Amino acid sequence: MPPPAKPSPAPELPVPSYPAIESYIERATPEEVGAFFGSVKTALTDLKGPRAEQGKKVQAAIARSEELLGMLVDVRERLVAESKSGKGKK
Image (cartoon, rainbow, N blue to C red):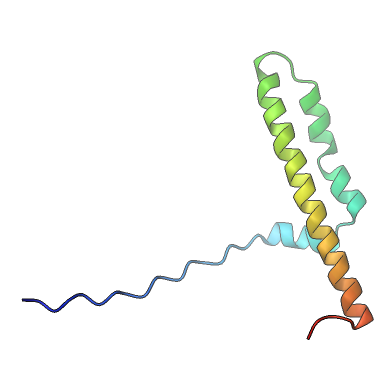
């Protein structure tokens, strides 16, 4: 009778890295985040016919992306402010 199989350790998953987004967030202002998707949103409002439905879905995705980018910029600004004031948690 073979010995019971030892459970193998779970493989480590790679950590996702998004260098383009990271570099954008490091330098973007809230105004730049708001204007980032402006031209795309304008083009989506001009869609007619069957593509208009797809455009609505894309607009919803863009709105969510803008919200998330705005949150990241806010967190970055808060972290920078905390590091400058020296009131960060230790």
